[in-house]
Length: 298
Image (cartoon, rainbow, N blue to C red):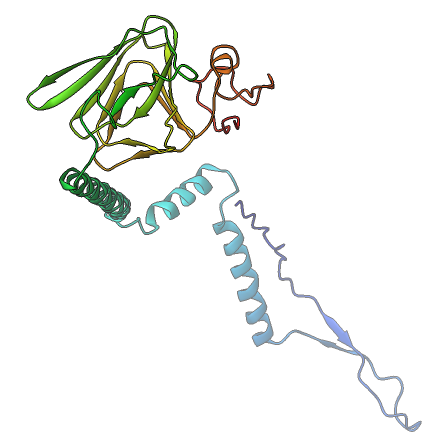
């Protein structure tokens, strides 16, 4: 901000006579020919006026002209004499920012620790349930057997397409049933499809292939999955009476579809899982596509 001082005008103090007419009484008897007497300024008044004039002139002469070298020098001197900021202010600000960052980091670590603890507890609960399921009694036979994995032999419902007959092997008390798929869409009809805890069903297929396992149980029982199911592609298990997975079950396939529905061969080959028997398309045309649609009712 530029401040401009305007000097007050200096008047020279000069003596001049001040004439005042003396008041005379209105009495007519008074002499009206009296001569006016001159009046001079008293010494005290002259001294006061002289001091004020000299002080104003000195103040005007002391103020430097704006933007002159003297004026700039005075401004610089004023800035230099101003109190400097405290040397540790910047360091204190950095320390405060660091403390806030450390608090946020601690909160993040605490949240991560709680989340990891919750995940570990859930895994432990799952493992405990799996161990309890393994120790529970089971009446499902291993491998290809009556009440276990049994191919449908009923002429009205039997059918085995685009896959070789199942074979099984036993090693260290564990049974493996292998099914080799020969086409991109295989249809396998089972009388029962129950997998025991010591049985693994391994579908030998390509990643973009699908197999439909249809269960035609004459006793209308749900399928029990207590063992393992493996495959590189899509495995579909359809039982109108339901599919039950126990705590000891394990599935390792690209896509798994377990449905309580009735899917015809034509629907599976031509329209997929989400197309009905009348040809109306409900959702994705491929049974292995990810979708939230419901299967077509039987």
